Length: 340
Image 1: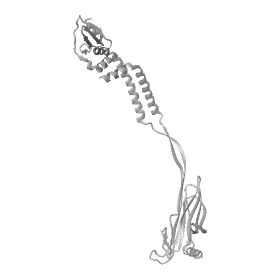
Image 2 (image 1 turned 45 degrees about the horizontal axis):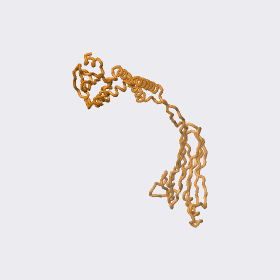
Image 3 (image 1 turned 90 degrees about the horizontal axis):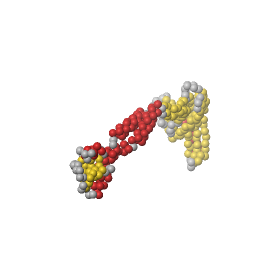
């Protein structure tokens, strides 16, 4: 009970400051809850608009003209991982570019084949052959062009170059696609390439000749987010709790007697010096009133006596010969006990 008595005594002594503090904080919490509820926050959101994608690629095809157990004569071979000069000596390159179809787009396609002679990483020969070069303004979203080459003739040409250089270096062939475009909002270039390999009777593109670009415009906008129920309800709950504590503190102040509380606290602190009992009133005794229970306990300690507590009349006393030192929180009980 000592802890409860201490808390109640503190509340009783500090009732007005506590009520003022809790009332102000409680009202601020309620105002804050209303503010959070009626003024939701906003967030900046980024959107990508007017998105346009341009894609370009090169596909291959060849017609089987030679007799073979692999393919039927006259069969069209498309996008094979390898072709053979004895079966299909002519290969076609098909350039396809897709653009936005809801507007006119100016597209320039250029397909080149470059042959480079290299020794120790440094070129000693370079030649470029343009296979496709055209410019179109289209509105249907698609641009296409094609060109064929005789790979047998190209292989023979490379063999002649190797013979002329006496095998000093090696020759590399690269197929390169350059596409420039201009839409209503964007313009740009796509460049992609892959080695064109001729090895014996076989030839092939060593990789995909394709790429794409996507353009967009970034815009920001403010989006209102709904208020967090946990936030404003928590503030409101705390506000009502604090206002409720104000009423509890006021009621505690009205119903509590600080002197009684201090006595209860002193009783608990000095319990080892206090014994329960009862004592009669005798006229020859001298009765001395002590201001506080703590002072009475000091008298008991000084006189090596015990404090007697009579719960029936709620009086503490120390009997020392003809003198009785007493303390009571209720003068009416003390006067009745003393027959006053």
